[in-house]
Length: 175
Ligand SMILES: [Fe+2]
Image 1 (cartoon, rainbow, N blue to C red):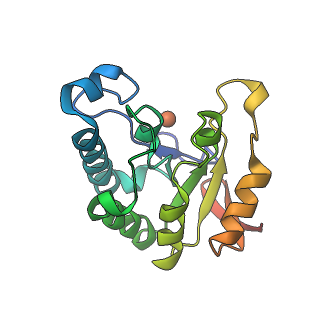
Image 2: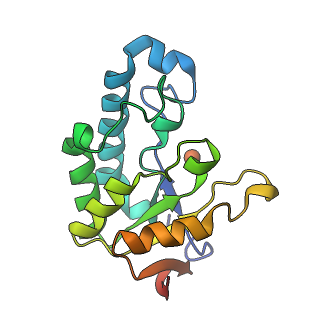
Image 3: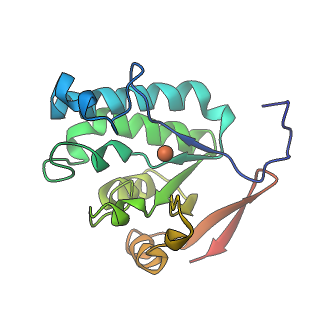
């Protein structure tokens, strides 16, 4: 990271691959099944957060895998995977890293951002304060998608501020 110095305002650390396979690919789930697929994804994400927290400012779309799970979020809960999610959140909080609230989940028809509300609540409950907001737009039409919904949800979860980064330094902005 030293190579880039502060030439970036903001770096998102997003977990995708598990053993060279992205949950985006159906084969990821076909090979393992749904629950082991989630377990493998959260396990890998925890390991990444613990080893690489120095390389990013905010941890991106924490439950991203749910977008592509065979039943999406129908059988997915925070409680089921809390043994990996809790220490991941702990790592972010202890090292002053933000958690991303990614509205892409709404775009994928999940009715939730990534991560889902229970995880945002848990992060707040554990003392987490820094939330960055992203739309994962990929195309201009989705820039800022459902940000008002996101604002309301974050307030419901007990957040009063969201975080923006300039030259990799956080700034708290009222929601
Ligand atoms: Fe991503």
